Amino acid sequence: MAEYLFVYGSLLSRAAHPTHRVLREHAGLLGEASTPGRLFDLGSYPGAVPDPSGRERITGELYLIKPASPLLQLLDEYEGCRPEDPRPHPYRRVQLRVETARGRILAAWLYLYNHPVAAGRLIESGNYLDRIRQR
Image (tube, rainbow, N blue to C red; front, side, top):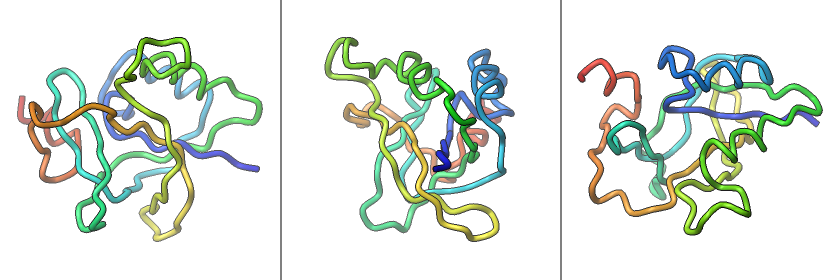
């Protein structure tokens, strides 16, 4: 069964973060996608939280994870949410509905921020690249 990953922050291809190479090695880019949620600028990285109303959306990229890839375990380590990592974890990996640019709905893994976002700044567009451009 195919597994998908939705990224919205430092792992975006155009964010130019060194960890993106791990993603390129273990998954194939399918294109732009979005999911209901709110995106916050937390300084050097963003954090996504659910939007129960479904009105606000986060824009990102959807990847198809290669079969038998250790990608999710590698990203769990990167995001600090392995079982052995100190708790509370900064992120939690969940599966949510993601909509592709062509309107297809898929279940994809993504990392939600697991702490209060009161100190963060809402990225109103839902697109982390917009925030990077403003810096």
